Picture 1 (tube, rainbow, N blue to C red):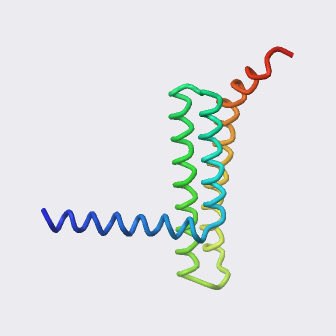
Picture 2 (cartoon, rainbow, N blue to C red; picture 1 turned 90 degrees about the horizontal axis):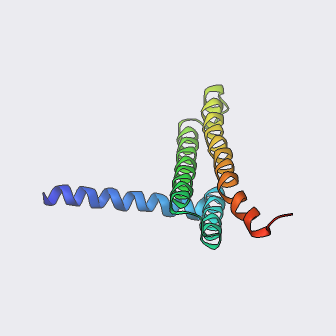
Length: 125
């Protein structure tokens, strides 16, 4: 049991190191964190519902996860080859496409959740 706990502790430390590395070295990850915090603050200011906040949090987690996967694929591709190869380009482009798709989805979720609350603040035209 002690060995199992030690292995999980090491895995947790490695995972945390990966997150710290991403925050320190990846500008896009920092942008995602800033936008995520802004969405949480805006949600709090607008008093969005509990369910809407859960959807925002899930969308944030999905976006940050996709950014980490994208970064991982890019780093692994660079490790495998430093020369231009079509398959390496495809891997990087598809990973970037995954992130773009997730970002577009996050904007759509934000529009559906925040716009009605913002319109309620302005009152009737």
